[in-house]
Length: 191
Image (tube, rainbow, N blue to C red):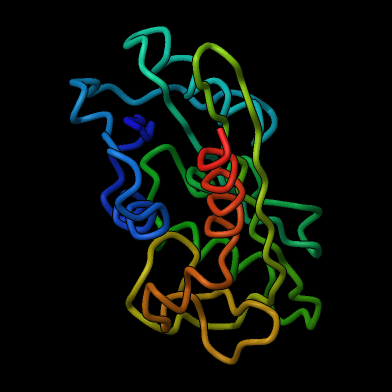
């Protein structure tokens, strides 16, 4: 089955290919000649995932899935949430986003957070949603060089290292994205 993943983020594409395996022919936006940034203007993560999937489906007519992820920090009333990628500005600077989070948290001991991914799938003109959540803690300084986004400051519950300190295979056993994509994969296999 051929599916478009509505992303040109090389880190995400690599992660998703490893999750889905060889059962699917995965195309990126670049592969189908969509070069522009798809607007992410919805107030909820689910809305952004659906908007991206609909944009690609309406442009290409191909079966597509899109994801949106937010880091939700309890002490910041759920921020950065839907604004995670642009928390420190429109240029999607991960380092600036991390610095802003750490600055806002300051010395608080309340550092509980969760990553939440929602995947929107449009398959044969029907829409489906899949969600994955991982709870964890925001540490006080960056650790690790793997992954992307907030990975260097997020330690999932039950682990002692950040996502950025984990090999991709280990991260894919516990991450929010992996949990959502496992649900997507199960659905596609049974489809």
